[in-house]
Image (cartoon, rainbow, N blue to C red; front, side, top):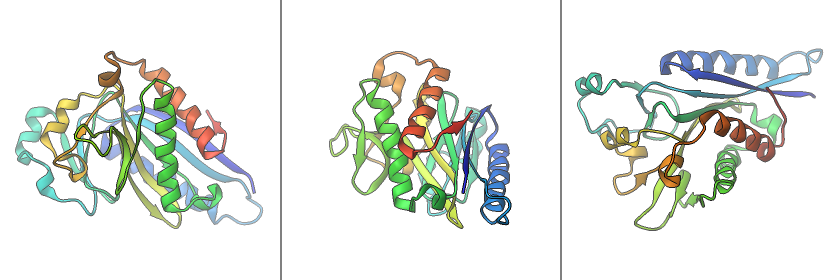
Length: 229
């Protein structure tokens, strides 16, 4: 069986449009998974994009973690979506890499827990290359700095959906993100932990395109599949 992992950079795209495009790619992966023996090539995707200001609430989330009335969203130029991933509320916006790995976990030899662990590992290794020491926080998905301390702050949130062993949604990695938008929510449902970004930790903005390319390369290393770019 041949596995083809395609990389796509959608740039800045409205959240609703990206959700529709994700579903289209998910169907492509599903169709290739169940294709006849003559069509052995299995298609998978890794998508990077940015979204205009938006808050998304996972299926197990709580509306009260949005700390502002919905009519205030217009004043800050943001939208709000209830979506079908796991996890609670999070924010997406410019300067943040939103990643959508749409892959057949069976092709990659992964279960759901090991898949999430692999995303975390990719981010942790990538940040280490910039001198940022990140780790996991027991009992919470995502990538954190200074976990298990009063300074605990999240730099990458993860929320996924898996159906027929094919993934959707993914991660939100703060690079040059405007962190002020997180003040309007309890990020991922936490009231006692902060958020951060690469630019905040390093004290300077990052070359966004360079970060995207480097992160895609790290995904290749951790997941063990070459991306078609």
